[in-house]
Image 1: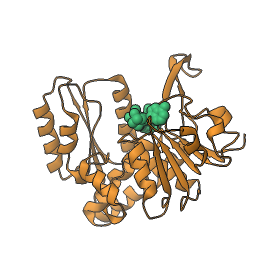
Image 2: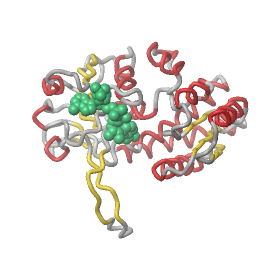
Image 3: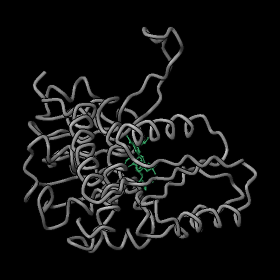
Length: 302
Ligand code: NAP
């Protein structure tokens, strides 16, 4: 193996320790802690386990944490009223509505109802605009892209002038990470290409990438021969390709693969993220960072 592994599990611990310390300092100086509410509608098993992890992380960090579980049958009007209640709640700095929502609720309406200054997911159109403008306008970068940028920076990779190729143009990963890498500033200032299903000759774009960020959701899409020797490869894809028996619990667990052929790619790349244990652990971490940031904006110390 030639590539250096960029492990999200290790970077997560570093960042969580920093947040924990900052929370203690702010509490001592200002008597406030970040407040996060997570609204979960229904009981989708993936959402439940994700929300549980969020709660555990928030509690570990000493946040004021509210878990608001609502039945699958809640009306759109009642959910919007609930969001309005938390918009007005002074103890809450971040409002997170776990997606997906049941079909009778319009997700767009729900996202747009969150106060943009409490939208720690960074999905509200106001925050998307702030991200486009960048610089001091940027408040809450979406969590997965923010995590990707943090990993690249902490691995000490030069981004200024680098050719960054992003495969995927979703609103939650592809577009926002491309925007972050484009900004004039540290950990960015790159020349960015976004590829998608209509891109002609995907291989040729990938081959010139100094930093290749793949978020397509297609297992093994990126072939080893598409990788420039020494490049940094960030594999965002999380694809279930089968099941196996867990050695720890004996229960059946999903076999996860990324969008990159990891075993072959690691012999060519200079840096690479594994799946699992790469980008995955960064999302909740950055959610916590955004919630802390929201409190700091409110206190005028950001
Ligand atoms: P998405 O909304 O399905 O978007 C996928 C994007 O990839 C689309 O823009 C699509 O192009 C493009 N694409 C698909 N197949 C392609 C191909 N053969 N060639 C070129 N482009 C292709 O997915 P997403 O929500 O961004 O998620 C992407 C992956 O990241 C998934 O595996 C997801 O599970 C994972 N993910 C991980 C995390 C995490 O680790 N924390 C967070 C979010 C997502 P078109 O626009 O042309 O259709």
